[in-house]
Image 1 (spheres, rainbow, N blue to C red):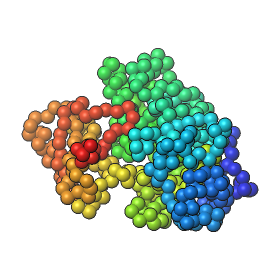
Image 2: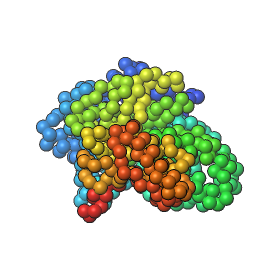
Image 3: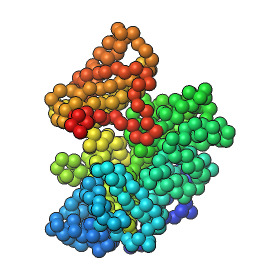
Image 4: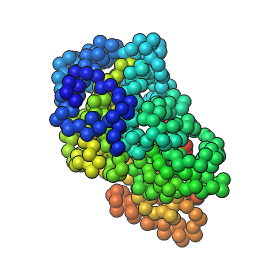
Length: 461
């Protein structure tokens, strides 16, 4: 590791992959050894960004800050946060990739578009080096989640410029797996392919799609277990954070399900190892992580059980650098060592800050509601939605829609609704209105499932 603090972290392409680790040098590095490496990389990234990105040059000038004065990660707090809405505005009305395009067009090799705050997607691009860095981060994550050379990965993510499509496809290839680019909307074709191939494979999709695929298989007279999908790597929505959803997926397919975390603007940066005890942060040398209070923006110390919003800074990006980008994801940290020997902090995603709502002074995430709904299986299917009729903070509890797994008599429905209400009140300190819906009546999605419905916005549209 000596001397790396003055060098770029070059993706190693698996040359030193050993057992449980894709890149043991950075997955098991001690924090004291990592810090000077990342501080040096941060200084180089900021110097490059100030010179190459008109967006950040103007942003820092308008804020009256000088990025050249940053010497350590603590000094980053003097620089303003980057909001997704700002990145969207930097693209709108601009040619090619907007004012944060920090590399010339003839060095860009791939385009992606992420959901923005308006109807127009936010355009980003990669240089060849950026794509290699993405593959390095993704290979660490997917290797941690159990993908290996020799696996056939059936990738069921959206390939239409979504970061998890082509980018993650290339990541699986980089670590040596064979990738089947299935995409979305191809469930019947995938079922036929799996039946014909007779191979133990790996499914890469959202948790919602795994549940959809299981239903599609049963509709075709097939048992999901017989499809041969023995590994599941899931990302894109927060389904695996709900224990009942994870259990249903694993039981249906006879697979081991592992969670991978990333954002559309960065890369896969966290994954569960074989211990299954939280997501490991795997961005050492590539991304710098901070934790902040969402409302105040104040730093939250990295310690056991710390809760805050995750903020990310690129350490080695050419085309679209990001400095203190707010993910709007609320996480809880675990700083205790893991038996797998990885040294990055572990974390649990509590939910999106954008989805959190306040009921009579209590912060509530839809995921917490989903975990409670899952306790009532098999009477319910596990599908649910939280409906906000008024703008938070709420003076009255929200409506919670829950789908039944099978028909119930009126008295059984009444009793179940009452038990659901009482359990939510016991655990989350508010008593919602519970609406029980018939089996199969709630929308299914091959992508992200909508768990929070802001009806007050739809009513005013």
